[in-house]
Structure formats: C-alpha cells, structure tokens
Length: 147
Length: 147
DNA sequence: AAATTTGGTTGCAAGGTGCAACCGATGGCC
DNA sequence: GGCCATCGGTTGCACCTTGCAACCAAATTT
Image 1 (cartoon, helix red, strand yellow):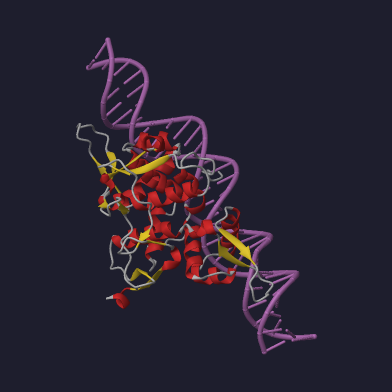
Image 2 (image 1 turned 30 degrees about the vertical axis):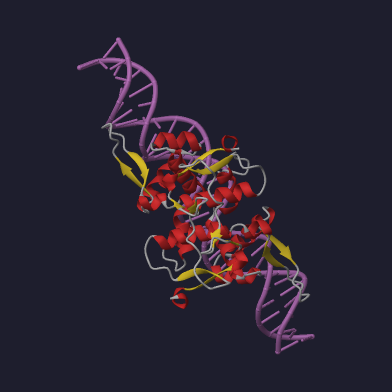
C-alpha cells in the first residue's frame, strides 16, 4: 500500500516529518549544508541510487526545502540550493547530530562561533535568565494560556 | 531490495537516522513524551497498523530508545517507557516541531519554564555571551582545533 | 465461566527501495 | 566541427516494506 501521508496532520511534528521523516532526505539536507549542490555530488557523497535521489530531490524542491538555481557560471546544468526554509533545518540537523554523538563515541566535531572560534553553548532549552532547562523543567502548554 | 542501513556509518547524523529517520518511529517517541505507554495507546493515538507498530517498538527497544517495563500496578501487560537515551530526543523533537511551526500557521503550543510559566528562549545556538547565532555565524570544526 | 479487551501474528495487495543498464544532452578537447 | 567523457537522469527488474483486515491466545472484566 501507499505510504501514509502526514502532510495534512494537525501536529507540526507530523507535518515536518513529511519532509524530514526519511533518512535519505535528511542526509541530502546534511550534504546541502556541507556544500553539495549538483546531482552528482549528492550521488557520490551519499552513495544513494540515482532513481531514489531523483525522487527525493524533487520532493524536497516541491516542499520548498531546496530550489533549483542556475549556476552563476552560466552552465546549463542546474544546481540545488537550500531555501530559507531549508536553512531552518540546521537546528534539526544539529540536534540529531548532538544526540548521535551523545550516546557513544567522543565528539569529533565542534560547532564554534565564527567570531571568537569558541564552542557555542550546547543545544538546549534555556530560561530567560540563561539557566539551562532539562526536559522536566519544561512543559508544552496551549499558546493562549501564556498571553 | 532491503533498505540500506546507516548503523555503522561514520557520521553521527546518519547513525541517528537509523533510529529517527523514520516517520513512525519519531511519532512513537512523540507519543511517549505525551504519556503513551501501552501498545494500544500508541496504536489508537497514531492510527498506525498493528504489525508496523510491533516492528517499530521492537526496533526502538533494540536501539535503547524505549525499554519494556512492568507496570507498578502489577499487571501482566508490559509497558514501553523512554530510556535516558530516549529522553535525549526531546530536543530533536522540539527542533522538528519548531521548524514545522515556523513555516506557516501560528504556534498553537508554547514550551514554557515550569518554574515561572514563561516561554523558554527559542531553540537556537547561543554564544557564550548569550547572543543568538545564525547559521552563518557558526562553523563546524574538528574537535582538536579548539582544545 | 463467559465475554471483552489487549497485544500481538499472519496473509495479502500494492507501493517503495536498490541495483544495473541504458540514454539524450552538455561540456571538454583537439 | 567532430569525438568522447561526463552529467543527470529514466527504465526494468527483483526483493522488501507498508497498510489493511482477519485471526488468535492470554489477560482482564463482568
């Protein structure tokens, strides 16, 4: 049967998963942040089958995560670039990366502030006074209750 | 053909996607945070086919995201609970949620600090002085360069 | 004890995944 | 301009996964 779609789901998590709830799509986004732009670059860096890549790229373009752009060197081959929306996935990607590093081996890479080249604060929830909050310190409540 | 596995991939993102790069698995985790514990709760809250749910729950247990616990009321049916590792996915889940809300409709739910019930700082990268950093303000560099 | 709920398993149809072969258009080179 | 390699796919095929419904044993309720 056709895979169930979450596009119209009420929950924003489920809707997002339409774009991101697929290993190849997320890895394509990772590579886009790493600088990949052309079909062939994605193909060799990921080792994904070309037909799969075709479908995934098209889906990401349709969802507004990537867009096809014509390269400034005037070449005829178009390239794939992250849109503003796509760049918003950086946080998701880094959250996943942090989780993957958290359990197991040492962190081989560190995210630093370009200005002073010092590591950024670990990705976490922070209260207004800067305290780091754990899961249990937070609660998800309806927006109107907090006006 | 069998789906490609990322379990042994070098990149922590790819390894994480073994657990999380699947829409149902992520939604199961979402429901686990929402309080679902029993097979039937997941089944009705997600509307997922039972055979699929069986496989996903087993995988999440095998990966150490969930664990089977015997309920304190002494019932014979076991329940599924998030492990410490699984609880670490909260950040990933919230990053996905924030992204999904960011593009489009209004934010219906707000994550607040339990202590003062005020919204937490938006999920983002922060420098040590508290400045919020954009994607371009940061850089991923090898760990040894920052010692 | 009988009926119901729970937590699955099984069988099936249809769609998705991965691989390799093929193909037209582009670009590089002489 | 002609030749050849590369690029960006498409197609066909075998196998796997997904979703649905039917079934079932053990636990729970009545």
